Image 1 (cartoon, one colour):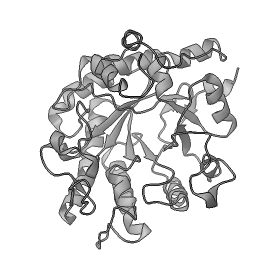
Image 2 (tube, rainbow, N blue to C red):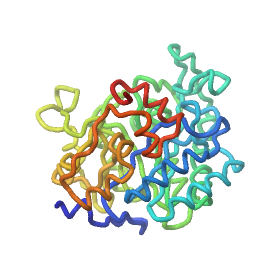
Image 3 (cartoon, one colour):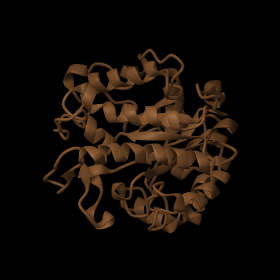
Image 4 (spheres, rainbow, N blue to C red):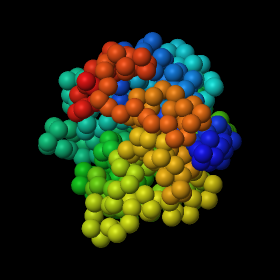
Length: 356
């Protein structure tokens, strides 16, 4: 047995995980049209807490109405949503609970938000318009307000979603950000929005409230050098508990030839992480995949599909570290038994080879 995966982990904020298994934030389409929490969302997440996950994170929760990324998304943009958020937080009292804060930017579907989407610059392909300087300042405040709201609801922390080509990635991108103000142009300016959000959340929330940051390691108009530089700066600043690097495949090499010859993961495990922890996600399906990550030097693993297929993956691992996890495809009935709502099952049906 790899005792490290079963061992506790303590963050700078003082919060901790009872083991090294985290539920990755996953799109699921199962909240109400107005962004409020549903029975399905409570069941899905509370089952993962009961199943032993040391960290349970919500799906991406939009901080602005115009930033909604998909139908049935969890909202955290209004105090009207607090009762449901409190109910959700109460159901996760036995684990380290986190709300992922998100704005889809130019990826907000117009038919969902009822108007043109917004981003750092005009974007013809998505018919998105550039945000004004005042709107940039407002969205920074939206992230901060959403963090305070999450804290007031009873969650232990928030994760800032700066990955997967959503709004914050769009600002950091040399391909999508063509602004000529302090939020565009140089590396310093393109990353400013994320730094200001983190500093604002740190200032507005109580001491001990946890802040994490999710980043994509490559693509999206940022070089691997820029991403790792930004990670190191965030570590050195000391305001975050952890980096959540969404690798898509934890075992792959970088796409850019000049960085190849070693794993993409290795560029992050070699950072001078001080007391900031590193979590990774990407094709971790079996116990041995998780063991391999710990051997490569990460602090915790984030499970997506494996957590969909086994709500109790950590508990199973604790009982038998060599158990064989179920592989897709599985039946809709199996997924409902694992706590997925009808809407979530329907969404997973769109994933090739996942639902029978």
